[in-house]
Image (cartoon, rainbow over all chains, first blue to last red; front, side, top):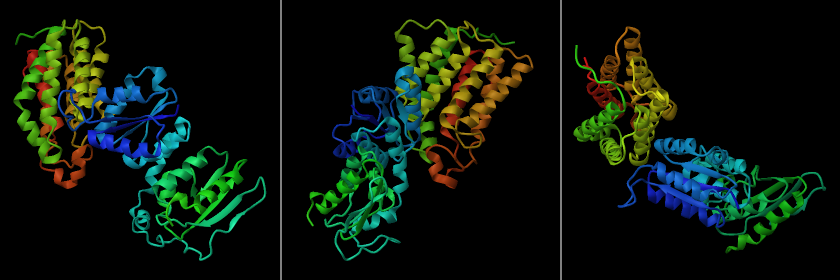
Amino acid sequence: MSVGLVIVSHSEKIAEGVVELAAQMAPDVVLAAAGGTGDGTGPARIGTSFDRVQAAIERADGGDGVVVLTDLGSAVMTAEMVLEFLDPGARERVRLAQAALVEGAVAAAVQAQGGSPLADVVRAAEGAVVSLRPEEFEPFVTHAAAAPGAEPAPSSAGSGTEGEPGSTVRGSWTLPNQMGLHARPAATLATGLTDLDAEVTVNGVDGKSVMLLMSLGLGQGRTVTVEAVGPDAQAAVDFVGREVEAGFGEPA
Amino acid sequence: MRMTQPLDARWAVLWIHEAARVVAENRARLIELDRAIGDADHGENMDRGFSAAVAKLDAGEAPGTPAAVLKQVAMTLMSTVGGAAGPLYGTAFLRAATFLGDAEEIDAAAAAGMIGAARDGIVARGKAESGDKTMVDAWTPATDAAATATQSGANASEVLAAAAAAARDGAVATEPLIARKGRASYLGERSAGHRDPGAESTALILQVAAETAGGRVA
């Protein structure tokens, strides 16, 4: 099992859409939508429903915990009420994340897919919001060569790894694939690194955070620099190197 | 001296019936208030919630204490209202019920305490403060007026009447305010000049609480 997610939105469509998006990167995570309100007879209305949130938490709770993500104000209030009504046993493994709904859900889902414990999944959700700076997404969107303030890409190809066992292991490679380090490769890296016993940074950000990796906005031709410390440091750097050199299996 | 009704479970049921009636009667007005500064659903949501609460009370055996009535109302509102009013009024009625405990009848101190507990629940749930242009701006003066009335020896229905009058004044006083909580806060200064719909529905509900108790709202 893994930590489950509940997506609470005023809109049934938003909740289901966020579940659909997050599920793409987290096929084994239970993602439960609790969007809209209504008595079940007609189409859902805009609003949040105590009953729907309660039922979604029950669906998502496989024993390892549940992270609840919400949209606007009253969704938070409804979720808080439901939490207050849970049995103490269930209550202690349910967390309400203070996170941006879409980005937080994707980051949390990837983290949960990697088998991380509840606290890490909450942290992933809440940390996702730091990447919400549009200028960082801009080069990612346009495939431009450089992000503002970023280092220019070197002309040479991958330079391999260096380092002693027990110390920092480093490696640098050039992104060969057309799309660069977009959502799917970011998820691949973050998910693969999650299981390894090492502190890993990619261009200075946490390599186990899909949102932070995406926020780098690294396009084709840009350099990926990995630094890892810990028992699995070498394995971590090797893993990133393999994935980057293979262009994540995407067209160059 | 007006006849006053004992504030027991029967009164609580009567209050909720009257609340449903007055909310239905003001449905369009609450929608209009909410359309000006929010998402235009407050009248509809409140009408649906209180209608459901009445239907639930009428369907089963009437709960035996005021607290049991208010708790059932709270649960129904939470499940049926949908908007922010659901968790807020749900919490208000729930906290009021918790405050009343097993009491068969509500005296002056309990009436004031019930209103204060409801207000505290709303503040805890919505994190709004006085002056944010929310229902707190009706509940807080109501709480203060109820406490003052109790201290000056008023009976329960007079306490409710004092609370209702203060809630109504509080609702009116939200008109010039700039919203700092809820959907209206997105409008910033454009929210000024409109009465807050949640404060208005609070005033209506407290007014019928006083009226059903036999109190005269000044």
